[in-house]
Length: 148
Image 1 (cartoon, rainbow, N blue to C red):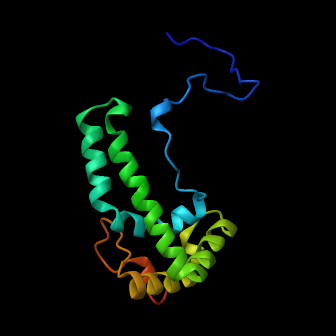
Image 2 (cartoon, one colour):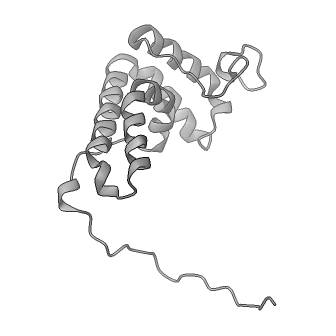
């Protein structure tokens, strides 16, 4: 038999009392959600091998400390790509992630800057945006969409 219980909401913010391990201090990527989302498909392509090693490690052992070395490799790879994006396609990348910030992180409203970013990254870094599981023409390559 089900019982009724009053809802209770926390009154203050939660602070995890567990300190981070001292040996895990390594640099972070240093980008907010919009630049990371804008570069996410390119990070996936560029860092594929490191990401797969990390996921295999996580599958092998659920202890977070077990895969710190692989995690650092993924972070370094992402930082390397972000540096290359800044050096080669900064204007296009900035236009795309600022559009994402303005439109609540939705891709559909930012197809024009996305196309210019994809062209720049392909021409200068030889990376192509591939959407996993896309069977027909991906949305970012279609010419006649509702939102251009």
